[in-house]
Image (tube, rainbow, N blue to C red):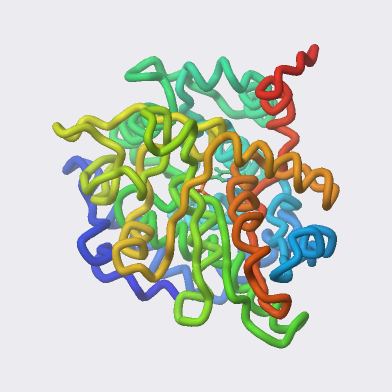
Length: 398
Ligand SMILES: *Cc1c(COP(=O)(O)O)cnc(C)c1O
């Protein structure tokens, strides 16, 4: 299901907008990806790590209490929160790191926002005995001190990026610069379905395990396809992984939940599809939150993992072609959903994933009892507990 991309383009989106010095390296990476993605030995090693290290296949869990409480559709949760390191990010990191090894690389670099992708990359670098350097906005290193230490514990070096607004977009820029400086032994592990081709396609490929499993699991459990698949969208990796195996199933509605922050009518939002426009940034043509001069806006969401001013090019195409629908969920709605799923199902889900849950809460009641929703829980919410308490005005001593 990776053939929708032609020459790195998704309709008008995608492409490779990178400095000359990176073109040769990206071509090598693209060749390696094409050589190995269907190679039996590569696939065997990938599956072995996914199953025996990352804890796949992840459960497709029937959320009985939530389904009954909402009184409409039957709700199933795809439990990426149960993966090693607590989110879907590990699926993609294992794939890219294996590719890096095949290419003879000995050093992994990556960007990280809240720290989830950085932790996943540091984890696999430790497992593979590779050098690892993580770029993180200085602001984020201060907000996520625990994750910084976690990465260091795993043997990675964490760089606090002081350029720009010192957040995720600046970390990506810094990581790409570092890659340009030192390509010979270095592989840049991209954390979302973003960046120059072939990254969006690679991330789609490695994350599609989510929907390949879910499609089989739901058919086995219910004998039919779901009516809707809902996932949260930052750059779009867990969403594209959740949609991939259903793209040709026209009866399955695909829904991405974006972070509206304080609301799409405020400046404190990260709802790219709702408010963005076409542009070129971080090596790709896609949709971005930007001003009239193409200056990338600073974005806001309570959820650090959704706090990105753009979206991957395949989502831009799916939005324009209307194959997928993108909805916006505010901080308030996401926090309420975080609390709701904890109380009804006993699951503390990531605040990112809670955006998807919030949308399920909106649509499930109006659906029929024989209809099915699959909602991807992209990660676990332990990391968010303190922030939610703060949002509710509760003081917790750490
Ligand atoms: C990083 C992250 C996201 C957002 O990234 P996508 O590439 O859009 O999936 C969502 N949920 C969790 C738990 C994350 O760690």
